Image (cartoon, rainbow, N blue to C red; front, side, top):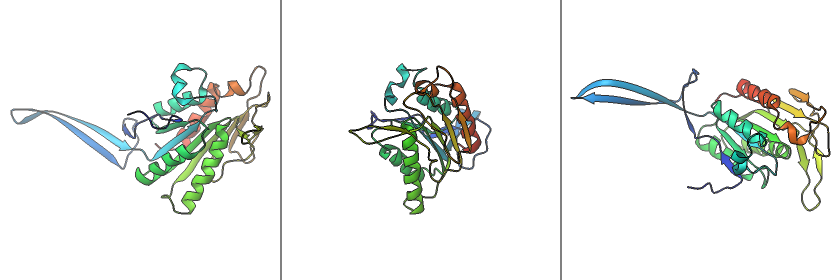
Length: 238
């Protein structure tokens, strides 16, 4: 069945084989038996575990999620999402347009129906604004007990900017840390008309500015990817 929301792509299925050596408390075990003449001659087990966390990633407005396979090496935010998936996380990628609605609905399903307890949000460029908005709205839902309790364990900005509404669009550096996050990482550069900024009270921050390096390069930077991936692994259980 085609995905009904063209702005969002689910990176990973909701169940994962427990093969990384980590202890699980909600395992489902499938047992396979080879039987001959009513005698079991072979036995194999496969263990599955439901996720207890999820990661939401927002790219830039011009980065269409479904076009990512044709832009490997350029759509760095979605490459990061794929890397996190390969490390065993339940990852969802979104465009910042049309807003946080699709991501918020996915969160509500994960927390309300799948037992997700911890979440992480990552945003590049305008996607950084969506991270701030999603953190704010989700924390309000939790405070109102509209969804079961869940924690925002990690947030990240990659050259995050705030965009004014149409018709007059102005891009300004996002300087506010997302609300109610346990740990915030910020990577930014200061060249060109679209650029990020230092964010007060960030837990891990680095100015990446250097010659020949700007807004269109920072999201493809493998050093930025590595820093985020390592922090996700440190702060967020699968």
